[in-house]
Length: 253
Image 1 (cartoon, rainbow, N blue to C red):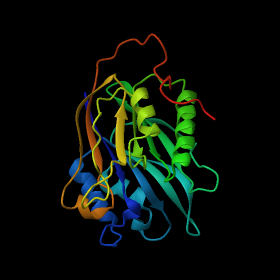
Image 2: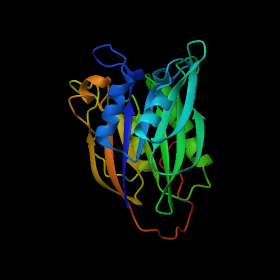
Image 3: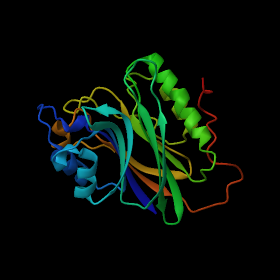
């Protein structure tokens, strides 16, 4: 069984031309045709249908929505991460990654069913400062360890905001066995220089392709390019220990 997963920072639907157009975001996602996509910087606001970006995208793409709110947006709206899935959703949980007075951040776990197996999708958005990201890596590690009942392989995706290789990259590479040793540039979308957006996966999944989606529309619809991975879910085998260990991640503070 193959699954296509993607991660996309949609920048609240605002493109490089400063025009907010959530339909362009929907078109970019449709070009990819993912089974699961993790979105960052998503707005849910009252008013006309496009104001609730998460619900609008889910309806237009025919996907199930799970939202992880990180902060308020305006007087009655919300802002945060979302996961859209064509696969059946069997569970979800949220984790607060906020650090002191910095912008609120979060991680969202969504469990999906793939041919009788469960795949655990973690979608997160890290902060801009190194100290903040160190704290967030520890909080994410605690979130993973707290998910002791998970028995299926994990996929971690998101905007990690690590502009150069550092402790976040090293920790995640130890924890996850994905062969994604050479990350791809995704920001800014029109001429990518920085490898901010990433997907990691467990050894139980076979990575077949990994690439940024570089269509003409994707280069203008947001300030980030989406990243896409095609994964093969290996045949089930009995695990001798809980799959989720967090051994490669730092201890929680």
